[in-house]
Amino acid sequence: MALTVDKLTNENRFSGDSLIQFLLYLPFGLVLLAVRVVLVLVLWIASIILPKKSSFSHLLSVLACCTFGVYVKLKGKRDPRCSLLVANYVSALDSLACAHALGTISLRKWKVPPFFASSLGIRSAAQFVRKEHFADSPRPVLLQPEGGATNGRGLLQFCDWPFQIGGRVQPVAITVERPFTNVTVHRPLDSGLPWADVLWFLFTPVTVYQVTLLPVVERADAAEEAFVETVRGSIANALGSLARVTPGLSWAEVLWFLFTPVTVYQVTLLPVVERADAAEEAFVETVRGSIANALGVEATAYRWEHVWAGRRRRVDLRPLAEQVRQVLPRVPRADILRDLAITRSVDLTITNFLEGTTPYTPEPEVEPETPGPSAAPKYITPAPTGVFPKNAKDRQQSFQERKLQMIAAARQRYIEKHGLDVAGNC
Image (cartoon, rainbow, N blue to C red; front, top):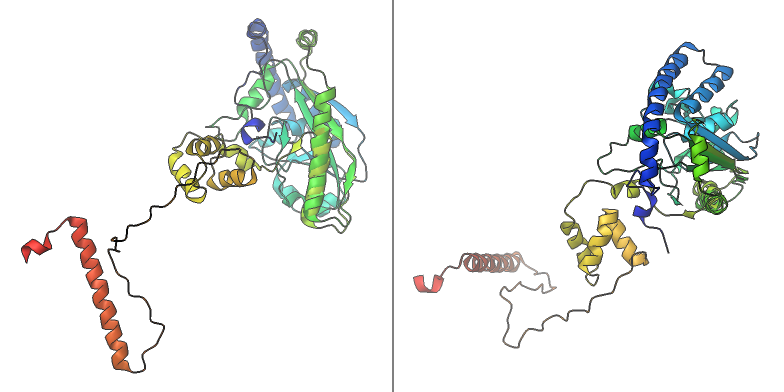
């Protein structure tokens, strides 16, 4: 069964663990939150004072991991010839986990303060404009082209712009696990800034990241779409396999996490993907397919705007349903409203019905009523004769006749609209 958009996000913060156990942890969590707030201030001061060198950057990443309780498990081997890594997007601190484990730098995806950017492994987009950075860079670059964080059950469509910079990409599959709560929560009125998610990092005892490096994907002569799907499928498959082999957090581990203020990420380096002479879209799909295959999840056809459309505030869906009914009159209104509640898009809902993504039972066709023999049209529109008059007099006469007929038709419509009794007044 294909995934729907609502299955790719988390609406609730709590992940279904025992409420009693969470309440027992609550006093310890509040104390840990207070301690980590102090560590945030220390991290802030250290990021301002320490020079921007590689050794100090690693020290800041270690301090940031201790502050936010992040623990990273690395699986796989990174290809030193590949300076571009492509990964799925699962949380606001993916860049920190990869920067700590792989020494990567990432594009800024949310408005993080500048003094925290270096410690989290984040750079502004202006620093990635030049293509020379990807050809010869001392630090690998991490790209997450999904556009927004999901719950890890599937991969969104990749944006094609990150893959215009090379033909060799190493996919990375990222999974995250945490006791009590979900790492990322999508709320209808959220402004897109994950400050609430970051605050829960400070409260939670540990968050475990698993970063899996997948085999490198080379573009070669593949088409653009094929290459993107290869990378995406590689990550999706890796996510699925990790979900099958990675055990859940036991309560013995949770009790141990109470004494170890860290969160564990596992970053898996996949084989490098080379672009070669492949088309742009094929190269993107190759990288995307590689990550999807490594993650073992479905490479969905959704983009981030489709996911975010379902999380917006409530709106009246009846006008949208009428637009869908005009195109698909046999689709039941209840099924249309149910799909619109998820997609919030007329075009996407129509596509779901046409492609069979959303099943429905067609309504019986309504036969049009046949007019009786005495029925006659209210208004007579002159039919074209197809013969152009030869002289100006005949052409002028035809124009006058058409003008009189149009005036008579307009007069008749006005009389019927206002219910006038013209015959009685004559």
